[in-house]
Length: 201
Image (tube, rainbow, N blue to C red; front, side, top):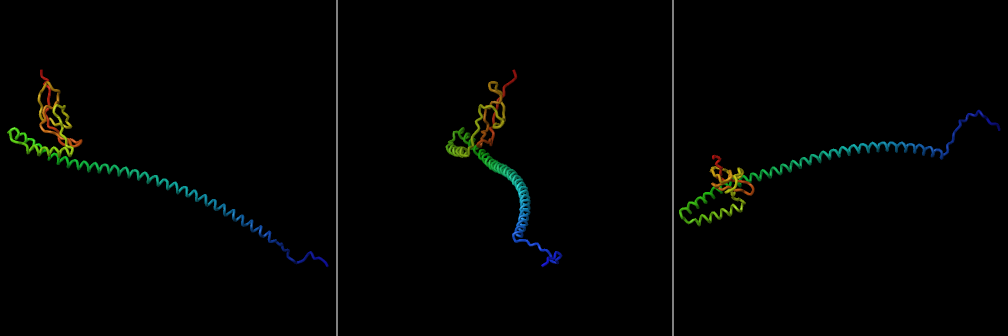
């Protein structure tokens, strides 16, 4: 039997199943590697973006915190001013009432002095004055003791001057009308007479 080298048969490369599986595995691994690389790049981008967003949010929080601090400080200042205005308004009304009350009180004292000088019984007036004194004490209205003190323009008002070389200048020699303090506020200065030295020789 002879062999014909010029045969018309087409050569066929037979690939085993093992080789096919190997090739498929290589392609799969390469694909997975490419996919993993892309995921890492994408993940890195996401981390950078998140980091930037976080920085922005931190800045916003810082700005909001500063605004809150300023708003709180403004509120506290407004609250203090409002309370101060209310207190000042209340004090002004109380002082106005007390001044009117003191005018009546002064009238009772003058009436008592007149009646006492005329030898008229003043027990009724004494009782009323005692009640008035209790009211003044209750609301912490205290008289200013000025006699013998040195003149203080904050609590005294000089309406007459006498010459007395034995006294220091501006010594209060007489109380003409009693002054009063409401707690720490002077609601009425004491009308006084003060001394001056005679400089003429």
